[in-house]
Length: 334
Image (cartoon, rainbow, N blue to C red):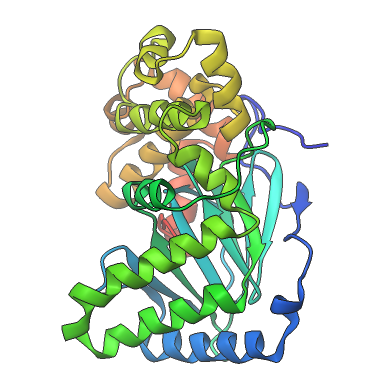
């Protein structure tokens, strides 16, 4: 029932894609304690974000977000991470599927994926408040090696991102993690312990299977994730699928199947999106012209770049950049 992001002939997906809803609500998610913890986390994020924007913290990998206005659609890259929302609404589009995130949800990204993001509900009085915690896959693998989790059911690999409902078990360690921001001397010791608990809760929850598959050495999803990470680090180079298959230690047809299963794209489509998003950021941030940005991200033909940029973003490069600057909406990555 899903439809795919078109090969780069398509443009940035609109918000009319299919909607992904969180899993069935359980009694733990409906209890009064859940509401209390969401409110507590909301107050803690607000206290540590005195103004609008993204706020890095003293805890490695933890960023707090405070947004006071809706935004247009913008492409972004998600790393393996957990994004918890406690106020406001955000729409994430990936692989033709739209994920609507509100104050009761979290969004799990188990691989590096290009998405289209849009803040749909935020104001000065009721800002969008959320946090993002990057996931250390080495920690995930370590926990998996020490605990017995559900045996994989052999089903087809799922998409690289998923939405879920926040529960008491997940919200409690996040509240304790933010408490450390007021006790900086405790961060070096307690931060890692609390983050391990968060990973444990994820692995025990309904979305744990996809995280386990990516982290498990030798699993097809883990091998595909290695290819995705390599491609993201080397997107400016010419793409040779046989070289990518060697990185993943998979046959080319097997890699293509699993790559598309995780990202809804072929490796070539994925590379093109990486290049276009990177070029747009360099034009916005570094002031490069279209031709210079095109060559820096790996294009050999400026005219090909212009055509593909227009198809993806809806208008030619410099016109798009002018509109972005006038709107004051430079590239963001949350």
